[in-house]
Length: 314
Image (cartoon, rainbow, N blue to C red; front, side, top):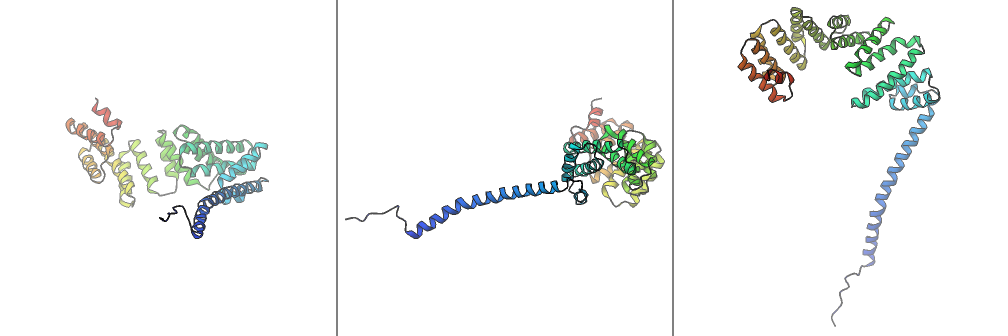
C-alpha cells in the first residue's frame, strides 16, 4: 500500500514556533500602540498639571524657560475670568509676541501679533507707568511686523517709547524708525532716525545711502556706497551697493560708468533687475535696439517683471 503524505502535519516544535510568531505579530504592534497612546496621555496630563500649577499667577518661570505657548494658555485662562489682570495681560502680550516670532508662516504670526497688541494696549489703558516705555517699544515691533499698512502705528509707538525715556533698545528703535519712514516715503525722517542710531552695521549704512539717493543727494549717496564697498565683508551687501551705485550713475547721466558697473554685476549674477536697469541706460542713450534686447533678457529670467514688460509694450 502506498504511504499517505500528511501535508498538514506539523510537529509539536513547529507548532510552538508558529504560535510564537502569531503571538509576536499580534502583541508587538499592540504594545507599540499602547505605549504611544500612554506616552501621549502622560504628556497631555503632564502639560495640564504644569499649566494648572501656574494658574495662581506664578508663571514667570515658564516665561524664563521660553515656554511661550504655555504662558499664552495659562494667561488666557486667567484673563477669561479676570480680563483686567495686569500681570496676566503683560505676560500674555510679551509671550504672544515672542511666540509669533518663532512661527514660520505670516498667517499664523498675525493671529498671535493681534493678541499681543490687544493685551499690551489694555495694559497701556490701565496706565502701568513703570512699563509704558517698554510696552510701547514692543507695540512698535508688533505693528512693524504686521506690514506696511500698520507702519504709521509702529512709528507712533516707537516715538512714544523714546519720549518716555525708554533706553534698553534705543538703537533698535532708531533703526526701525528709519526703516518705517523709508518704507512710507518720508526719507528726511528716515535719514534722521538712521543717523541717530549708534550702530555701524553695513545694513544701516546702506539704508542711509539709499535714503541719500531718494533725496537726490547723489554725491552723498556715492560717498556712502564707496565707503561700504571698501569695508564690508558681506557679498550680498556688496552686490546691493553696486546696484545702487549704478542707479546713481544713471541719475547723474554717467552712462558709460553705469553700463560698466551693470556688466560687472551681470558677470557675477544673471539678474533680471540688472538687465532691466541696463536697458534703461541704453534707452537714455537712444539705443532702443540694445535696450529692448536687455528687457527681453530680463523677461526670460523673470517672465512677470513688470518694468521690462511695460517698456517692451510701449
